[in-house]
Image 1 (spheres, helix red, strand yellow):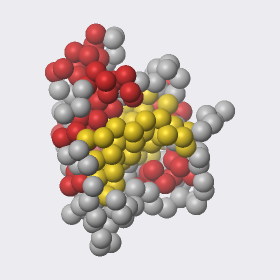
Image 2 (tube, helix red, strand yellow):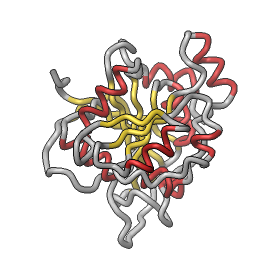
Image 3 (cartoon, rainbow, N blue to C red):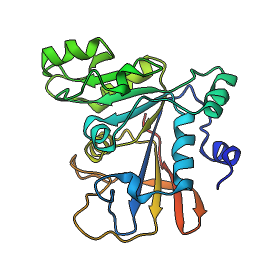
Image 4 (cartoon, rainbow, N blue to C red):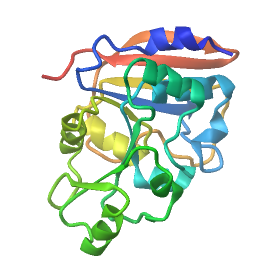
Length: 238
């Protein structure tokens, strides 16, 4: 297993007050983002340790509604050591779950809402069904971030405006594609799983404009045959 204290140092940001959008994803060697439909099929205990550490370091965990359903998300609850680490630094005990959804096809009775230790955010647009917005408002803060589609820049501003500067995006591919197109990704944490998947599994991104965003390698960690890569944007956005 990797050393948690070293991981905290490796993934720390210089200033928590400065908004920072970090993306954490996993891929097979041939580019598959999932195994049997879920990303968890590609990972191991070391990748899970990094996954948990990144959540511990975050103010908010941002995820698209499709990935949330596909991966079977529950309440955003950290384990006791992570809670102790956060509270010792005067951070909230748990990060806030922030869900991006245009159709609002979400169950208000899901444990991710009903058992959440911090009131989740649902980030949608003005054209989303009004009845779904009302139903979700009972269990989450529903935030309009756009007219007929969710504007990723408004999502990031909405989070920062609520004191959630350190954002960890866990996907999915369509959300990541829109964040890349909008030039909002400050950091990419990419785990390369030592497998070849073949088949028709999708990439870590989908949709969005085809653009080039230059990143620089910050570190490489190894865990047996798995690579844990951290990339930072070459130039911060203004």
